[in-house]
Image (cartoon, rainbow, N blue to C red; front, top):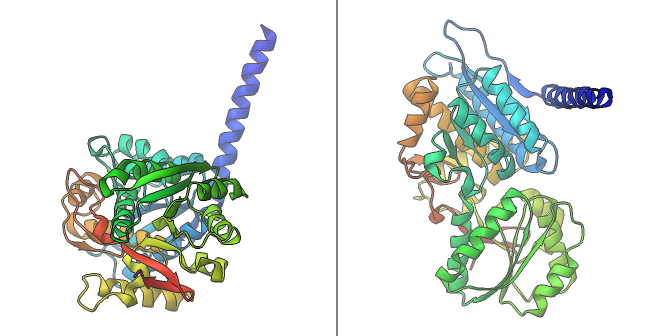
Length: 399
């Protein structure tokens, strides 16, 4: 009996210590708490959760920079209807538990009216029930369709990244037009990889695509030779890799090292970062992917609806940070601007913000032209992605 009591006490203490440590870690890495000048009106508060460190850091870092840049510019111009905007950014360290703790902190302690982020699908899915229960609008920057589906159970959840369904259908349509019929797929076991794999399998037959291989791997794997070798033996017309982070780099290196460049390699829209091209150099030549318009703003025709916003954002971001924009920074741009648009229209009441977003039409963003509805909390279609290939070390419209 005494031993049992002691074990329970130790268990409670361990839980307390773990919780405390996690909170300290999160609070210790608050980034970009953007103080605004005190005014007559209360600040409108936006909470943000980005993967500024960890495996998703190259996604979350430009998101944080973009969010801070936008809010600073808004406050320089007097805020929203006389209210300064306060942005509180937490780093989830690419960890679902820490993302959930950050969401609770933003809602219960910081009293924000709306949350933007998290960066990745797994962290976003961890935060969804928290935002739903608290009735605080969440505008995720991640891709999985599960974040906003089923929409009747996601009334307070929106997202700005194109869904994996959109990327899959844009990719399959391109393949069908090129006569590609047999495809081998690889995906990692993260929330992003699992969601993308489901959509690849679900929509293949709609485009006359046969999946001849379905290989999986872990997000920390360092060798994909076995998976690529197996796929090659099945003689596909093309290969699709669906992952994010280091393994999408590893996939390209393996494809190149095994001399498989005669089989086209497609990546998900998660490959849309200039840093991937810088890391891979010539090895990335020929890789195909659907990409967010923000990445190729300079290639868009002058009459494209997103030409103005994409070129203006790129000019401001690149002048400030001396680095090119990414799709992920674009997702944050859209999320923060949607929140600001709601503040302008209905103030900072969370319920009114939710209703405003759900009925917002024709919002021109970096990722597409958003048309939300009670049935669609993403508001984008496959047409909001553009097929590109890596050519001469840069993005080029796919031929």
